[in-house]
Length: 129
Image 1 (cartoon, helix red, strand yellow):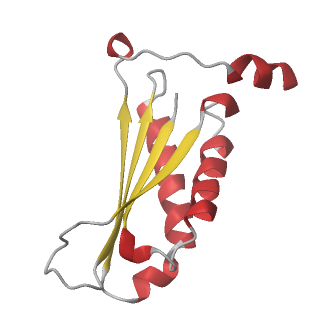
Image 2 (cartoon, helix red, strand yellow):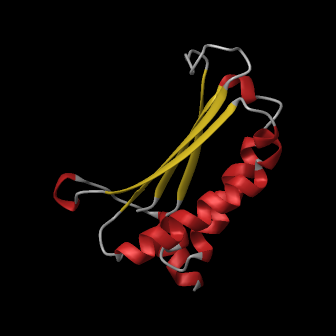
């Protein structure tokens, strides 16, 4: 149940390859060994309207949210969060060369009592393992 959302300011279009970034995150999640492939979702949403810091038009952001099911230790959650942050920072290093970019990541556990899901992909992907 790892659902990863990347929200960014629309002024990053043309500066960030969001398809590639989503694949970098996807690979990093799987490389952690904590999640199975059929459960991983990475999606990107760009905000056309936003107000950042001092309202300078060059200001930009990427805010990442990683929602996961229960069952991982605090150390495992920290390890995967640090790995994702490092991979994304590496991929976006050029944005940090100017003082107009903000990057954030939050890892949250989903309450299993208040979460419903059904996944037809698991059977197909588990049979390949």
